[in-house]
Image (cartoon, rainbow, N blue to C red; front, side):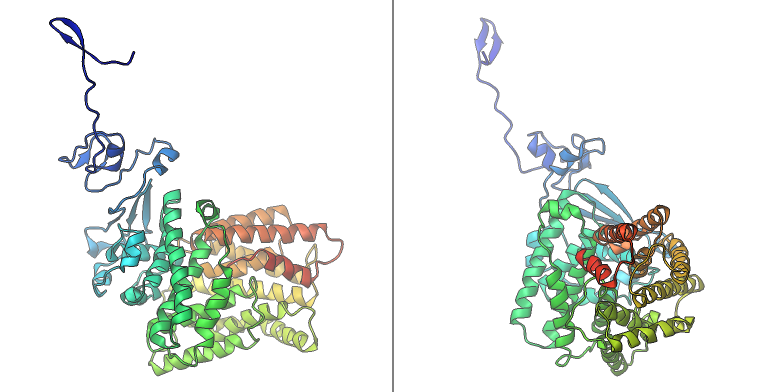
Length: 523
């Protein structure tokens, strides 16, 4: 029935079927899969509409997602970077644009100056990283790092002094560092496809393995410790950026223990045996301070004392002084911006809230904090050196939003819980803070440190309209704060809102803190 025939002078004759085209290793992947001949001699393959210089093919946008996701990567240049040709006339305010097309990932970075990239020393990716992503190169890691910085940091147009650019020259010190760096960049900047989710998870898994080995085997010296301190901070950023898709892609475990225990061990327990002898090391330590302050309310650690941040800032400023580095916005972008007193106050406020029931000593401490918050003088202690007028207004409003959030929070803990409706004093601070946050979250580049005051103000919302406004503001924070953080924050605020509405009396501080901790949110 399925025999082949050929026409001959004697009529139809049986003929052997023509040989089937064997799968070739030449050409692009879709042509190889379909056993089609690829137009390798032309700039673009006319059959698959993709460059012939790569082993992967981008399906046209009209194709189904499942069909696009089925294209598997092979060693090739999957990350394509385009810079503006005229670098003398670059618009520093223009955001980076990512063209998402299946497994292809094109990042346009009009704001990166050539001299910023040329200033980096040449370096090669470790073999362990290339085994996971053979298509990566040092240049591509540099470019996606800059895209990550533009997404994560607010008002950053100068890259040469940033924590990311300072870390790149030494990033090839250990493969675990590059694995964490790449995983975080992919999670934050790459297209939201299953392929890139899996790729990021592979790098994340390898980074965790290397970090565990490093903590177990390394000596307590600065040379071995700096890559681990940088790695654990990048893994923390990864956790903020990941979404539910990562669970679907294969990550079904919680890595909170790595960040909560390893960070404190690497940054605090070892600080007696290592010195912060580089500006990058100092910025890493300050990033750790900021992470601890912002995160303590949501993930408390009973091992940390009340004066922990005070001592940490003292140690940080001592090392800056030995290096001859002034405390200003360009060198201390977190503590220098908010001021050490206000930074310490936010931590102490979170710490005391978790000491329920409050004894007389902690009650007096909380009353002292509330007295400090009665004046706005506390929030004027940050550095404003080196920033323009528009940026100064942004950070001034951000400090004021923090002040409103702290004032509401301190009063709610002192009055033993959340009430519905809230008191007039609390209502004033919630509404004023929400108005400021609504303006701040409409800016082009939003700092992820706005997460703490926005979530705290959300605990005071009184009606559905306020709740919806709060959700919209959290969504605007998504690019910098991360999908995981935004999702858990919305769930937490919703749960507190419903608990307040259902309660006949005030929601106790103990129940309030229990709800907060149960969501395991990263701030």
